[in-house]
Length: 198
Image 1 (cartoon, one colour):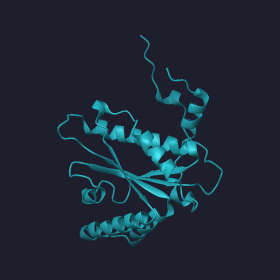
Image 2: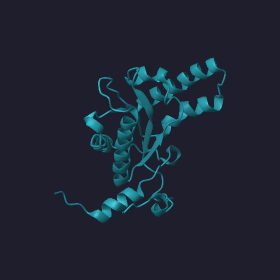
Image 3: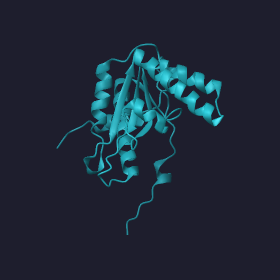
Image 4: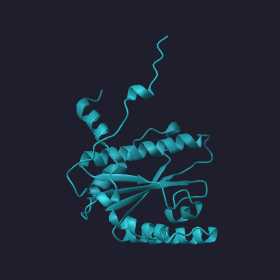
C-alpha cells in the first residue's frame, strides 16, 4: 500500500488557489512542469475508463494564434447577433498574452458508450483539479476560465474536436509576480454535510 505524508497532502489540497493572469510575471513556466501537470491529469477518475479529457497547449507564438482566433470568432458571432462589444473583443485579443501557457480543456465523447455526459464533464473537471494541484506543488499559478468562446460549437474544429465534443474552457498558467500566496475562503464543511448513522 502506498505511503504518503498525509499532512503535506492535506496542505497541498487546502492551498490550491485560482491565480489570475493579471497576477503572473513575464517568466515562462518550464515545459517539464506543464508535462507533469498533463501526466497527472491523465490519472483522474473516469467512469468505464473513457478518459474523455483532451488538451491543447498554447505557448509562445501559439498564444497569439489563440488570441487572434478567439477574438475574431467572438467578433463574427457577436456581430451576427448584434451584441458585439469592443471591450470584450480587446480582452479576448490580449488576455492570452498574459500567460506563460494556456491549456484548452475539452471533453471527447464516444457515442458508442452510454456514459452520461455529466459523468464525462465530471471526469474532465477531476483531471483539471489534478493539474491545479500539481501546479500548486510547484508554486505555479493557474486559473480555469470558461468565458469567451467556450461552449461555442464553431470553435471545435480549431481545437481538433468533433461535433459531439465540447470545449470546457482554458487553464491559464503562469509564474506569480508575488511570493505571497492568496488566503483561502471557505465556509465550514460542517454546514454542507449531513451524516446518517441509523
